[in-house]
Structures are given as C-alpha cells and as structure tokens.
Amino acid sequence: MTNKLHHFTYLTFFIAIEVVISVVPFLGFIPMGFINATTLHIPVILAGILLSKKDGAIVGFVFGLLSFLKSTFEPNLTSFLFSPFYSVGQISGNMASLLIAFVSRILVGYMSGYIYEKLIKAKDTIRVMITSFISSFLFNTTLVMVLAYIFFKDAYAMAMGLSGDLVLKAIITVIFTSGIVEAIVAMVIVLAVYKVAKKIMKGV
Image (cartoon, rainbow, N blue to C red; front, side, top):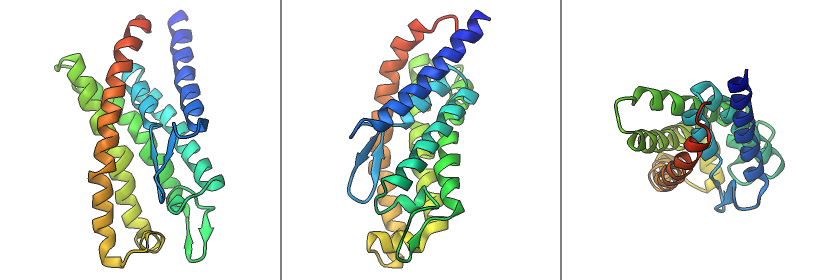
C-alpha cells in the first residue's frame, strides 16, 4: 500500500511539473515565430523511465492536452496542427489535429518506458541517454512533423508561405535542426534529473 501511495504521489508530481512548466512563460512553450519549441516532453520521458511506460503515457496525455489548449487559446501560425478549433482563412485544424496532439505525446511517454526496459543489458547512464534521445527525436519531433506532412501538407505550405514542392524540405529541416537540438537538451536534462530522482525514489 505504501509503495502504491508513493507511486501515485510521484505520478502526480510529474503531472504537476508538466502543468507548471506549461504556464511559466518561455519555459514549457518557447516561441520561435511560426512554431513553439517545447521542453514539456522532458517530464514525460522521465515518468516513462522512472515509473513505467503506462505512467509515461499518462503524463504524455497531459502534455497533449496542454498542447491542444495552448494551440486553441493562444495560437500561432501552426496551431492548426494541434487544435481542430483553430481556423484562419483557408487554414484550419481538423480531427487529425487531435491525433497529432495526443497520440504522438502519449507515445513519447509510453515508448520511453518501453525503450528503457528493452535496454536492460546496457549501463544505466547509456539506457537513459539513448531512451531520452530516441523518445524526443522520433516521437516528439519526427512523428509530429511526419503526421503534419501527411494530414496538413497544403495548410502547412500556406501557413509558412511555401510552395507545395518545398514543404517536404521544410519538414525535414525542422526534424534535423530543432528536432536534434531538443533531443540533445532532453538527453542532458533527463540524465541529470534522473540521477537525483533515482536516489529519492528508491523503493517505488
């Protein structure tokens, strides 16, 4: 019972951290003109690693919800990717926006737990570094941008002021620039927090 209570407490803590950094200006969502860079995937990855893939998915759902709300009530040029209620001129979101907002973020947490479990034979530091980098790069960035291309190619082109044949190049550029930077930042922060949190959470 005590362990279950501790587990629930830590899960609640990760959710609370997710909410707090989302509302602190320039911390959870970092405006970069046409898009927001984010650090909200970091608590999601940590929850997956330190608790379980199920818990990571729960915190990932919260991440998706916060992203949806941000895009709905404080939109930027690409908010249609995350909210079906965003509409400006010919550009609007649809139900696929919810797929991008929620599924990709839930997978960040779930796959963090899954990858960490599968790397059991590696040294713990290496497990954490690989897990955080892959989860951030593949699911927080690449999956989002691939889904954006599949469902919103034309809308993305209009929002960015691009011709249709340049959209794929723009998507790839985002993946291999901000995507890699976010993944490296996530890897460094997750590893640093993990070392401290692991000692505190012994027995969970």
